[in-house]
Length: 368
Image (cartoon, rainbow, N blue to C red; front, side):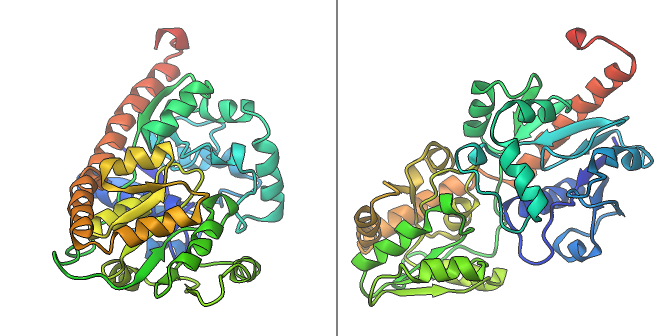
């Protein structure tokens, strides 16, 4: 099985969700199988495992619809893409495309790092479901990262293809925080600052948490930081890190009272798994995907109620409550493993190869 993973969505400095998903799956796959990856910029290589690679055009290039013609020369059996937008015209291989979530149908502001023309196309794309159907039906197999998103794909009839769940996970970063060690009066938020992430309510909750420090650790655009800084309650301690090294984040995560995320929509929720794996209590908005990931190990709150968020934090001042949250989180985090997810990708690759072989033999799709 010659498998290629499209790693062109990998960041060149700090991982975002899709970048980490890609790099972690490649690393897990490469432990057992021969894997090649596609990159578009050598600056991506420090963020990726040391496996063979080929450089091709950027996924935002006007030539993207034709990228399969270059990939064909590598003679893969299957290509796995962590996105659904990979060009496929003229492909001679099996193709797995991934749809992480349907967030942008409700929250249409595109990611700010995209070029302006791509942001415009992004908005237009999410005005209706039919363009998504066109993209996904080009695949042999469609992947997503949760049962919640799978059910949404099926509800909106976004593809005729089989949909497989390839869960996100979090790398083990040393030992969890020691049992019985008292936390500091600190809180951490890891994630972007897009509007649907609802950081505003998190900041508002600090009015009810005197003596606590909130660390907003991710990179942030200057204009967005200015907007949020204006919302910080008088006397509240809110610190914008503007990005953080992984080791520093893990150290912070292991001393705070809780990690928090109040997102209104998500495809998965990696910060939940990161916190649970570290033995740190997690407080999250009460939405279906977080219930799927966190089960009974997470404290769920109304994401529009700052007082409820503060109450959930203050409840963790009870040592017994904190200890119970630590134990439940550690047990739940064990449910998510990159090795398990890589095994699902490998199964998907065999299925995609089988279907591609039938397609090349001109077998009608109704007989697949």
